[in-house]
Length: 120
Image 1 (tube, helix red, strand yellow):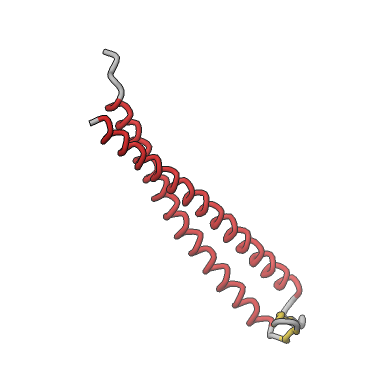
Image 2 (image 1 turned 180 degrees about the vertical axis):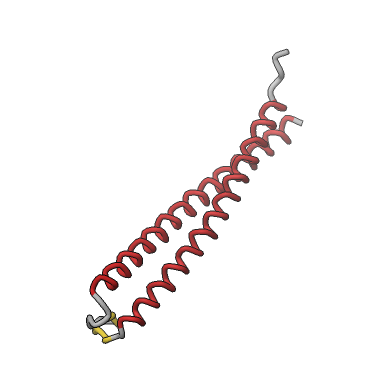
């Protein structure tokens, strides 16, 4: 009985470590996506301030291509929306992982309490 409980505790601790690693990874991904989204928003703001008659270029490898102002704006808006969707999906994944972490943590506590003699 004690060996089974110890094995169960060890498995739950391993799951806790893995879940915690995934939570950290998702938080990092959210930060990166939010940073990219802010950059896209700043680019849109600057392009709007420059006006539609301003020549705009985009880099392709080592060269720059002239692209119409409206096309660059639409690309940046699509990128911003895509990043927003990614952040929402990652937020849901983070909530699920945090719930799993809490449940696993409760499982470890229950297993330890079952293993230790109660002080009644």
